[in-house]
Length: 427
Image (cartoon, rainbow, N blue to C red; front, side):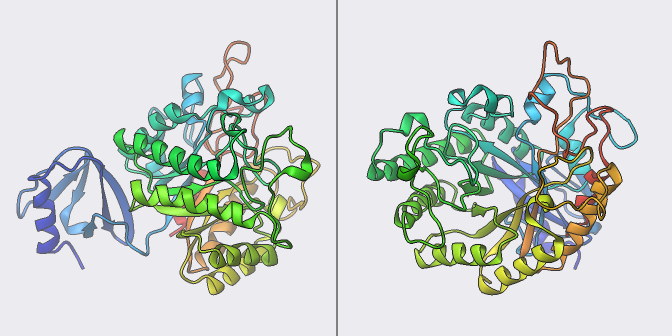
């Protein structure tokens, strides 16, 4: 059904309202575009076009306009946490044909991307020199600035709380230095206060998240203790044991409480990385249910060279979709090499997907075909797509200590990889 008089009335209302920080979703031809309104807007009745946040739409091509994301909407994009640093240091981004990209976010939107993810560390100045050389720099000021750009460009914003000063992943979930002396009860208060304050600052800056990860790859819990603590004292969680689950889930509940209070429309994501292990996945999210953790989306990391084939992924996704039918599922991290593959990968799929630009695209296309076949999956984020060393002067300016070889730009030419255009088919 095309734009109705009711929808037109909604548009007319724009002109009479101050719609600061309002997302508007426009359905056109089966796709959904997001625009971020920062000022009022007027529309003349019976006009053939309407301008929303600077983008002009033919009214006869619009199916509907809403203030809330449609339940069937899918979110596609990437984690662009280092984009600001690459831009500041002179990375030269070009499209697949070699034409210079002058506005990266506008370019990504043209490719059909509609959501972007950014990580947040508590105090990255406390990270090791090695971790800083891997891209650990995202403090709250950095995230506010990038988040504001993301929202104004009309993207959905996925905020990834690490609750650590550096990388938080299955092997490292260390408590921030400033929190290291706190008791469990004090940490329950701290995670609530910290989450609430960070979100309030983002909202005040017109960078309100639409999705919030309360922890990053928290398969074995989080806020274990310091990296220097005895291994036996770390508060890790295993699905084979009941140890530390009360502590872990209380932290999640406190973080989630802050999210609901400050960003009531945002969806909460619980993120694990056991995408290749059905029994661990099922047990983990069953624990979330049994402990009464409030969340909306199952978030997974899926890297084929760590987690296995797409058939394994699909089987596990279908099991999750069946067992936890009330939850949506997002692949919040994925990637595949376009240049050399490390020797220590767990699964070598290079015969199926060659380690080339085209092989990377073959993987992306096959992944999207798989995800499109599972009804509960509504999100796909490529990890570190913005990696691009072309144009950087390594003697004076660099972003990381080593090149990343699974991004969506060619480090040696600055051209976009063919896979950058694949994500538009996730719908």
